[in-house]
Length: 95
Image (cartoon, rainbow, N blue to C red; front, side, top):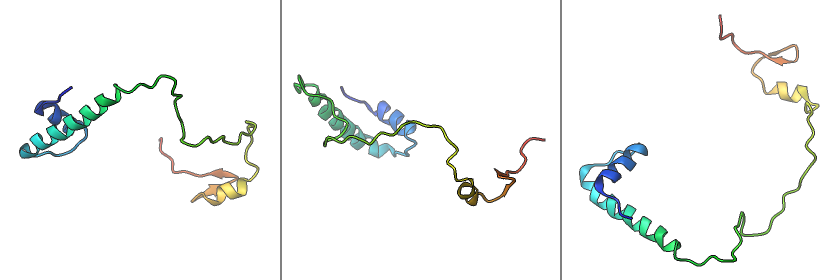
């Protein structure tokens, strides 16, 4: 797969990157080199290779999924800029 300068312009536009006209050739070569490298990965034989989520086997501790209120409303409200009657107070946004 090879990209042309129009594709480089489109990618730069989508990435919101300003690219000068004289930089297009260099960026085209860079993108083509990246795509060539990625195409080499298709040649690898990965038969029997299990997908990884981590390079070391890690099991996260699990806990029972229980719904509760946290049992600490004072601590939660301590973070609020304003509170009243056990609730957050916010500015009125609808008339």
